[in-house]
Image 1 (cartoon, rainbow, N blue to C red):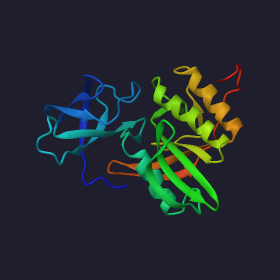
Image 2 (image 1 turned 90 degrees about the horizontal axis):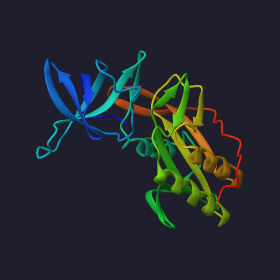
Image 3 (image 1 turned 180 degrees about the vertical axis):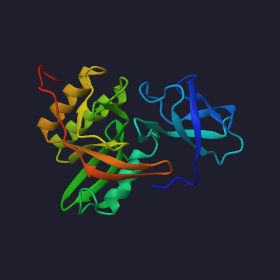
Length: 234
């Protein structure tokens, strides 16, 4: 996925979930943050960041913050693009080859899942989660509690019991990762639900990405470590 154009800036401070201040050529400017997660380890003062100009003249902010440099690597933080790059990779056969009938935004039960597809006589439901948290080379999700994410995991487990194939794809928006695991320190229930889903037959997959200031692309599959399920999950 290619952005139309990007410009470099220096991060100054985050004002709220949606707004931040950056410095562009010596001028302080407010920009939209395209991720409502905490991002505390990434959005620090003086960090090098990249912005996407808005094509909507009526918008209050002229730019959106899409990526940041951390320890010499670029991390994409745009939460709107992971499902798009996974969909592109599926269409190109680079992941889960042989998938047909691909559709985005598919409603099942009480949830809307990112992607629907078919492989042979199997119907697939796929949910994509973007990952930006790196802890010593391990990607972690979530970086903030997500009841919506928990609901998706539970509904995918239920879909498998009704004959669907299902998978959760964690798109790690950076390189330099050797393992993915759920972030129990932030949301223990999510890791337990993920382990239960895997036991029920939901495929748990993780892929890293090649990242430049103006592009993002799914790359290599990354091993997944799930917690031991220590309690009855309902």
